[in-house]
Every structure is written in C-alpha cells, then in structure tokens.
Image 1 (cartoon, rainbow over the protein chains, first blue to last red):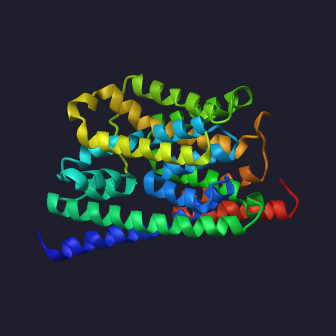
Image 2 (image 1 turned 90 degrees about the vertical axis):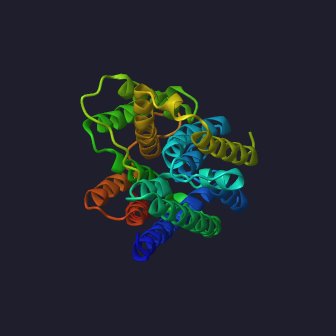
Image 3 (image 1 turned 120 degrees about the vertical axis):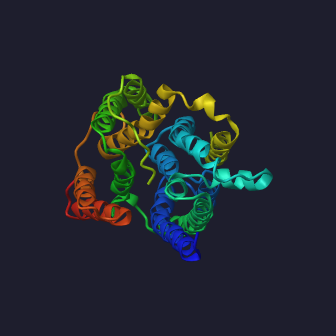
Length: 229
Length: 104
C-alpha cells in the first residue's frame, strides 16, 4: 500500500474534477438561457450536484415544461445516485455530518473511481479526491457559465440548444454498450417524440421511462455491469 | 411553481435520494428486477431527452433543423472518442454556423 499509488489516485480525481468543471461552464450557460439567474444556477449545482439531473431540469424548463415535470425528470435521473450509495457506503464508513457529506458527493464520477480501486484505503482516497474536486470545480464553473450565459444574448445564435442535446448524447454514449441498452434508448426516443405533440412539455420524457421498465422486466441472457463514467 | 421552488425542491430530493443509498439496508433494493430497471432508467431518460431536445418543436411534430446537424456532428465526435467538452463545442458551433448562414 504505497504513497505513490495514493498520489496517483488523488491526481486522477483532481483531473476528473477539472474536466467536469469545463462542462460545468456549459451547464451554467444553459441554465442562464433557460431562465435561471446566477444564484439559482449556483444553488442548483451545490444542492442537486448531479450533472445529468441538472441538464435535464434546465432542459425541461427551457423547453417550456412545468416545474413539476422538471423536478420529476431530475429526480428520476438522480435515482441512480442512491444505488451508487449502496455500493460506496460499504467502503466509506462515516457517521453523522461526514456521512451526509459523503452521500452528497456520491455521483457518477466519484463512484466510478472509488469502486475501481484495489483496496479500501485507495478507494477512500479516490472517493474524497474525486468527489471534492468535482464539487469545487463544478460549482465554480457553473457560476462562470451562468454569468457568461446572461451576457451572450440569444442562446440559439450560439447553438446552445444543440449543445444541450450534445451533452445528453455524450452522457448517454458510454451506457450504450449492449444491444438492449441501445434499443432502450431508441425506444425511449421514439416514445418521447410520438407523445410530444399530445402531452404537456416535460411529460413525454417521463412516459419514455416505460422503456426502462420493459427492458428491466424482460428476461436477461447477458450480464449487466455498471459503467460508471 | 416558481424557479426557486424548483431549484430547492430538486436539490432536496437529490440529497434525500443520495442519503437513502447510505441508510437503506442493501437487501431491500438488491432485487434483480429493480436493479435491472435502475440500470436502464438513465438510458431511457437520456435517450428521450436527446430526442426532445433535438427534434422537439413545441406542440408540433418533430422538426429537422440546425439542432439535428449539431447532433449528427456530436455523434461523429463521440465515435472518434472526442472528449466531452469538444463534443459539446462542435455541436454548438455547427448549429450556430448553420443559423448564421440562414439555414435551420
């Protein structure tokens, strides 16, 4: 159990933090163009602290969806963090406030680094380094993006609506490793598009979640692994 | 619901969800079907979000415009293993340039 190994894990966490910070800028800008002010964008990053849910929330609001649809979509996308917690809490054994902090930092990135480590000590270093770095950079860059977004004028002229779609496909891409995952994504896309003209904004995405229920209920031949990042 | 309510409510639900993962006994949620559905839930939601964000046009049917070109470029960039930020920048640039040229 050497120090260089711990340093390498900590550095990896830091680099992941910097990378997510960069896309925190795009989140801040999208939040601003969806009608959130700088403080609301920053509060969302600090309190919700889960990229996919945050992009979804401002995506639904930006498309004219109701607050209820935005919150529901965000909550459903965030469910996976609870499942990460089941795995990570076994390694990060904390009590009281530190447990609450650990739970809040349990997201895609920190979970992926934590469960990839060969032993508990490195797992803990990886967890706190990644979770902490992502939290700091994600929040700081959200503020930068929100300020920039407010100053940019018409978001469409900058292609920010296309940037939101690109963010979603980039978050989705690493999960499309099996045929069933690809079919699930395509079915959900089709359901959402077919229901859009007939349902209030935001709800087609929730209806499309039935694709996941069907995919989960059908018998499995292949094993499913969590890709994390 | 005003915007602050949305922000605070979504934040509270997120924190509660994460805490539940630390507090709920493992066996409650480790059932095969539940974990399978949970595995596919982000896939379905993100797939739907891509579609609505790219082709959605309010109460009308699907529309093909500068956003579709942006998505196409994003997919090409992902196939080429471009980093996350580059994917987003290329997609935005594509849509912005097409609109600058009066297309989409």
